[in-house]
Image (tube, rainbow, N blue to C red; front, side, top):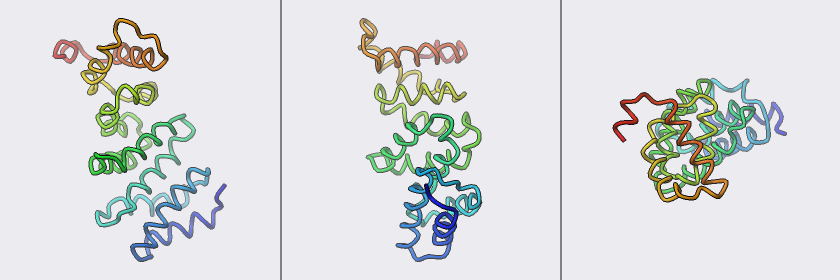
Length: 185
């Protein structure tokens, strides 16, 4: 577990250090958050760094804020998936979505809005993650077509746990959308 002094030092380096020190501090903040250190005393300073377009550590800081806010909601697998996406082919899109989500982190439905399309691109592997977000109140209806596409080859059998999770996500999503959205698919 990280201590209060480490959190304070990392937050200080985020705002006063050179670019290398700031990048290292961003990684340290994420590590501290994952080790259950509270970011509450430095939350405002961390949020301020998210608006710095030149700062390369914004994604790590945003992920740290999400870890700090969402760890007790069982959403760490979501954050793990987002971290993997932040270094993938769509990293620019992922970075923007993660930063926006971090700014809205206390409103899971609002924070999930930019994340759902990003996670939908990884279906069927991301079905459990989308299902977790939906269980927390996120609107996953924008990815209904992607869910349907991923589900189509599985409709006949749905015999693995992943396929069953995807099928439940699809049914849950259908139950939440209005008829105009369903008829448009």
